[in-house]
Structure formats: C-alpha cells, structure tokens
Length: 350
Image (tube, rainbow, N blue to C red; front, side):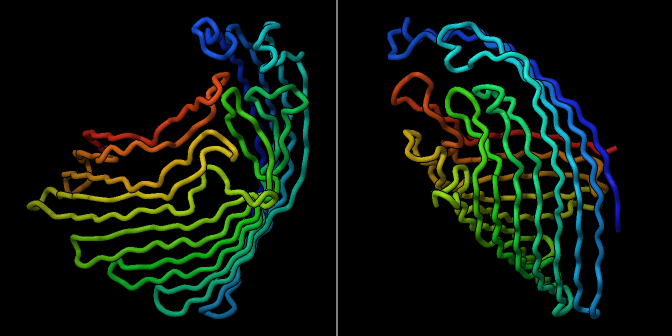
C-alpha cells in the first residue's frame, strides 16, 4: 500500500482581553491588574508526505509488517501584541508585527512481527518512530522570538499478546517503552501558557480483558501502569498518574420480541498525580475510585434508546488542574474532576 498527501491549512486568532483585578484596592498583597491586551496570530501551514507500507507472510502463522513515511512541512506565523505600559506590560510585553517561519523534512517508520500461536491467539512485537512538527505558541509568549518550539520525536517499542478464548472472553497484554525527544509541553503558570520542550520516558504495561459468564452478562476491564518521567531531571511528569483503569459489568435482557433492557455498573480509578512541577504550592491530586451507572431500554432494531445515567455517583471532589493564583502569594487555584452528574438521554437513529 502506498499513498501521498498534500494539506494546506490557515489559522487566524485575534484576542482582546479587558482585565480588571483590583487586588491592591481590595487590600490584597498584589498590584492592581487592570488594562487590556490585544493579541494577533496568523498561521499558514503546507504539508506534503508520501508513505509505503506492506505485509509479508513468512509462514501462515508468522508475518512481518513494515512501513516508511517522508513528510515535509513549511509553517509560517505572524504575531503581534498591543498592551498599555503598566503592570500588564511586564507580564504581556507588547511587540510589533513579526513573521516567523520554520521548514523541516523528516522520515518516520515502523516494523512489526506477529506470530499466531493458535485460533484467536497472537504474540507480537513492534518498533516505530514518529515525528510531531514544531511550531509557534500563540498563547502569550514573552516575545515573538520565544514563541517557537521544536519538533517532537518519539521512539515506541511494544511487546504483547492478544489472547481470545471464544464466547466473548479475551485477554490483551502489552508492555511498552516510549522515548520522547523534545516532547512538546504546554503548562499554565497562573498568568499565561508556557510552551517548552523536554525529554520524556514512559514505561509500563497495559492489560485489557473481558469475561462473559453467560450471554446476558459481561465484565470488561482495563488497567494501565505507566511510569512517566523527565529523562533529564528524573522527576515525575505532571498529569501522569502511575495507575489508571476501569471495570464495568454489563447486563442485557430482551423484553418480549420488541425491546431490550440493559444495565451497566462500573468504576473508574487512578492513583495520585502531580498537578504542577515541584517545588510548587499546588498539592498532589489524590487518587480516586469513581462509581458510574447506566440503565437503558431500546427497541430490538436499535432505532431508539432511552437511558438514565449517573457519573461519579459518590460525588468525589478531586483536583484535576491547578496553578498558583497570580499575584496572591501562597494562594492556589484548583479545578476539580467532573463532579456528580445525573441525566436522561434519548437517542434516535434514522
């Protein structure tokens, strides 16, 4: 299989922020944050690529697959910011209209082997290299010269097994090792978004499976362990819990010849995670187990379905995103994971 691609895209963004945070007037230990910021960003991207991929069967049970892709991208961006010469100018310094351009070509590819050890059972191993082109940050860089971020290159190795046992029962197991060079990272520091590159590693295992004791009842689960860290500092990566997973039980039962009842109960969980690089006043986000449920009735032909659902039924309040509150020393702003949600949904297919 082979193919070519050409893509042209244009992106325009003009933002005007009128800010009024009278910290000092309110007696808080921070200056008044008052004024406007007018920002302009325009981007044009031209991308061309060609790829080739093929599979060769060495035996009926043993296959090898490989592919290669060459891509070339030209990206041009024009930035400008206007701001009054007050406290805002020290945070969002104005700069004149500036045009930046970056062009790069790169090769990516993959190779993998598969070995069938029986009906519905497969062992595999793969290696791939992928590239995410660099560009320019449009979220308030300090100046136009600091807007550029580098291309990201990722090397991914995976070894695993896919084991089917018939009757809807299966077990999938995957060990992975991902090395990211110049990982593109955007972080909110309380005032604006900061774009930067860093070198990351992610190593772990993912297990998914399903058990169907009988036709109407099915259990499905997925668990991932991933150790994600900065290869330079060895520090844990933010927004990267070590454990993430879920388990669900699904029950279906026909009602007469025309309708079907389904009920689902499940739990989602993750371990604690960093919200901000240390040292930081932003606390760790606690691990959690959240309970969900859903019940539905539908016609046998799937033309309509009426359901009631609940997410995070125990209404756990867990931090999902946080940053130091700007200009208020020692204060932290936190946003929570989705709180308890209960709803009714009608779906119609036509």
